[in-house]
Amino acid sequence: MKILVTGAAGFIGSKLMGVLASRGDEVVGIDSINNYYDVRLKYGRLSEMGIILNDEFVWNQPIQSLRYETCRFIRMSIDDRHAMEELFEREHFEKVVNLAAQAGVRYSITNPYAYLQSNLAGFLNVLECCRHYEVKHLVFASSSSVYGLNSKVPYSEEDKVDTPVSLYAATKKSNELMAHSYSKLYGLAVTGLRFFTVYGPAGRPDMAYFGFTNKLLKGQTIQIFNYGNCKRDFTYVDDIVEGVVRIIQHAPEKQNGEDGLPIPPYKVYNIGNNSPENLLDFVTILQEELVVAKVLPADYDFEAHKELVSMQPGDVPVTFADTTPLEQDFGFKPSTSLREGLRAFAQWYAQYYGTNE
Image 1: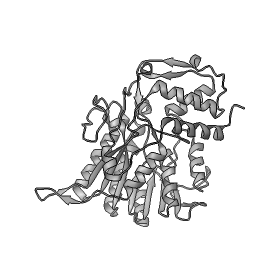
Image 2: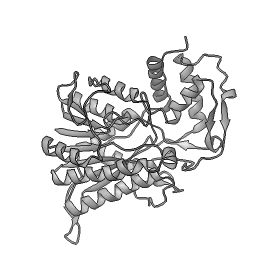
Image 3: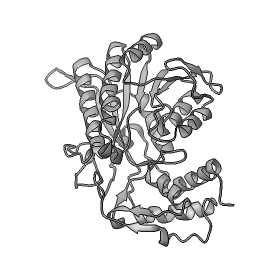
Image 4: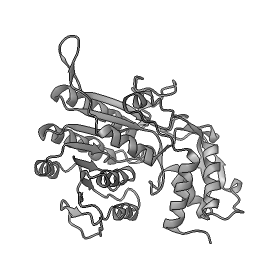
């Protein structure tokens, strides 16, 4: 199976590419490698894949993985329409996984224009290429943020998602609408995945667990929003990747409704741990695992470095995934405990940045 993975230097994309290549799929990964956060992390993820890059490599030129014969990487932006069309015409992909996007709820409040090209124009290019080059299944990353101000929990795929509280969430809702329209108009098989608070080793530095660690290591104060009265459905990255791999293989079926008209081959699934954790408990576990991994000393005064503050713009008090459809259709449910996941992160952090010893 020949698969395109966009956002391939990202947190989820790099791991997905490795899993697909290791099982024998032919994988092409693309990523613009922008400087939203430290590009050395992105280079590091790709190097794990046997893709060795430097600042001089050429845009739109394939680089062969030294680890996997069936894996290549191309520095390319999904908002480059011409390059995308050339890529699809040349490669004839069977499946596409779109993970490329400008991420970050809070960043979208201060830098709104950064979201236009990748999340909207770029996604349109993906849809157009999938349509014209007969891709059999498009899987794309949506987000739990689309649930916005919904008060009913757990969040179900059947719930209305008309009240986003950030531009990022609005672009993800827009992606779902755009994808549904292409599924209806052109019979394109599409599956959208609403990821819930993904975390783990080699993640994004702007995520809470990573940012908290960096600040604590520097002796800075971490801010815990809504005075600690927040709950998040933290989902370990390996569980996310396993869910994506299972879903790639099963495109929504094309069928007709009772009126004889075709039903769009379109599905949306939550991928979350189905177990929201209190933010204060999350911080306590993180602290404990950072000490065990020797990132921080055993006598670190955590209480002196914590500040409880009010809710920040664009945030919601709770996220909680109903994963019943995922379990019913694919026999899968994320299961990594928060302690297991944060332990893996702490161990990676110690190895990547060094310990306190």
